[in-house]
Image (cartoon, rainbow, N blue to C red):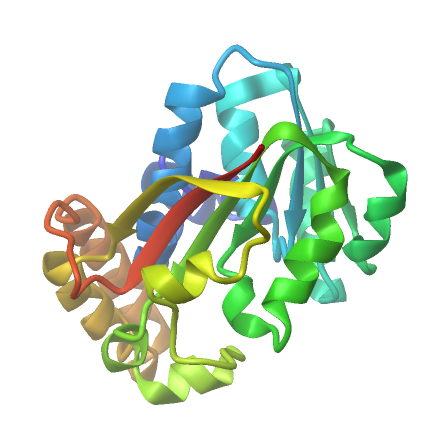
Length: 253
């Protein structure tokens, strides 16, 4: 099942449903940024009973990808201030994932619940907020000892690949994180368990092209997205200092 195939639950036309189920997300970068989470969860979470929290969940795709791996062993909760995204996430959850609930409210209040979550996701969220270290501190009390915070963030390479206009339009408040600036956000009780890079140079060519496709007519942009995603999502094999995204796992000691 390709990443983002859950979008099929939103469509009624058979052709749109087929395309979503076959190719998954239309955005190439959605495949690239979520793929490390899928790989990590398949190796470390499969077969475990987990309660998962996502802050800044958007339409819920990361939680849905975990549910595809863990099934009924997972209970998930997603929080986001965008009521439109939460409405979409709830529609998909109602159709396929009843074990996941979504809330349009402030998740930092969950700290009062005590250590109830096994995994907290900050997937492409920390670059959107002015006070990421404070948010991490406020949420960490609801994570069990030995639990993990899973993070995806852009690097400073992001604006050059995806355009400065897109970078600003989607609300990034800084150009990106390096390994050092990402580590600095986390309190002392968190140990960096994994750091990897994605959206390397080969895949960046596809992202660079796709970021400029919206200038084309809608149907041409759709067709181009399918072609680019089918080809370039398989080419993210060369990563290093020039990559556009970081994926990290921090374990609470």
